[in-house]
Length: 69
Image (cartoon, rainbow, N blue to C red; front, side, top):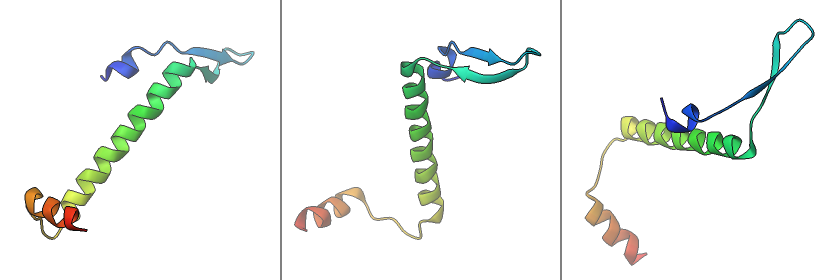
């Protein structure tokens, strides 16, 4: 498991019956989770782009074209 997830120490808010209803995280834990989600979204976008790509050009060629503009 990812170390961000392993280090989370949640506190729970429970109802009168003892059922968990909410979670309390430190601000740092919350921010770490958001960052991890963004990383996963970026990785997913990259995988989707690779699957849907119809062709690739070598990076050096792309860079030369990009720098000219």
